Amino acid sequence: MDLCRAARMTGSAVIDETRDRREPAAPPSAGDSRAYRDVLGRFATGVTVVTCAAPGGPIGMTVNSFTSLSLDPPLVMWSPAKSSHRHAHYSAAPRFAVHVLHAGQQAVADGFMRSAEAFHDVAWTAAPDGLPLMENCLARFVCQRVAEHDAGDHTIMIGRVTAAEGGEGEPLLYFRGRYTAVA
Image 1 (cartoon, rainbow, N blue to C red):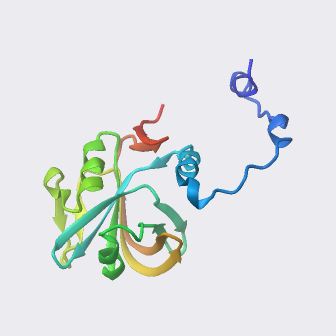
Image 2: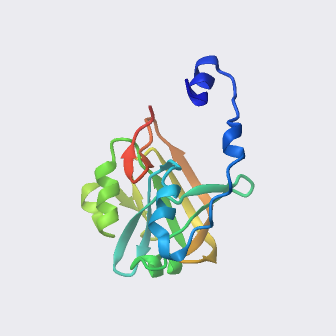
């Protein structure tokens, strides 16, 4: 019986000392980004769509790099790739909204992965300043962008939460390169 299974059966915490004796893994190399991404994929994340108002109309982007940052003041962060065609719009937008998707919204996530203008498949309204606000999501955070930080091939966007609301349901999760659900 493996140690993890034994720990689940007994409810006790077990430390696998054999792992502690291994040599540390080599640092990720730029030439082997696929292997690094595969290791990062072992961390399950929620799936969000981040929206903003752009000069040509509303845009959205599927994002799994979203996290809370601070309770006081209420801050969140996410990190778009600099290579994204949408990056400049988010850098210029004074506000953005983060929509946490529920388990039934995989098609919404796929739509915004392919196109910035996938709003035809989702109910949404525009705030007075044009900020697109999706309806029927698990949670929504409306944010004032307060900072941007360079982070390699991404930019860390920090927003002060000006409104937050949550709904009921199970989250849409992403794990090892595919969508999954809470077991």
